[in-house]
Image (cartoon, rainbow over all chains, first blue to last red; front, side, top):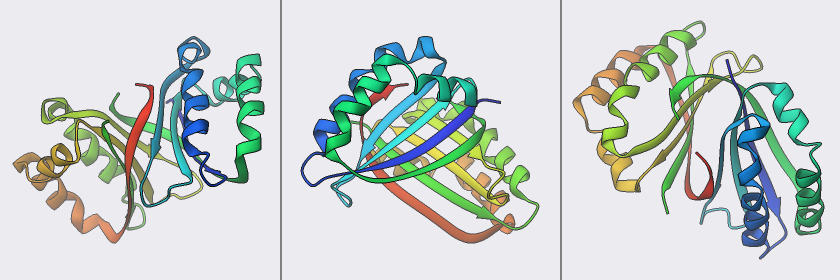
Length: 98
Length: 98
């Protein structure tokens, strides 16, 4: 069964859309790294929050992706715009339409 | 931009997997109803909780799907196994890999 990670990232006021752009800028390389799904969402009800829903071939693929130089560079670019408040929920994917 | 809905459903103890089966049983008809993504996940850390991540062509497509006879029948089958505790977060999908 594949591995899911459901995250929220809180940005400093007014920086949400810049961080969304950074998150989306690396999408091209994700599939080769074992990512099956990567969805970035926002909401009017929480204007400084970003939701990221990910499905990976395995937990190890997800962990390894965080060590890629592209990922590390993106994290470094985004970090000054984040408050440091994150949530994360690991999931076992039971199935569905992808 | 497409519409996201991020839900959790709490089941009565020991009924999670039956409800997951019901949720997955209707997947075949979802795409025709305007559903782009429907992912069902579970976690060892919350053994009676189910996460459902959905992306639809629009908010209206999602709302209309809840009125389909297949959906209503599935809800009726699952209902006796649910505690009534739900969470839901509407999202605007910014992009990603799907």
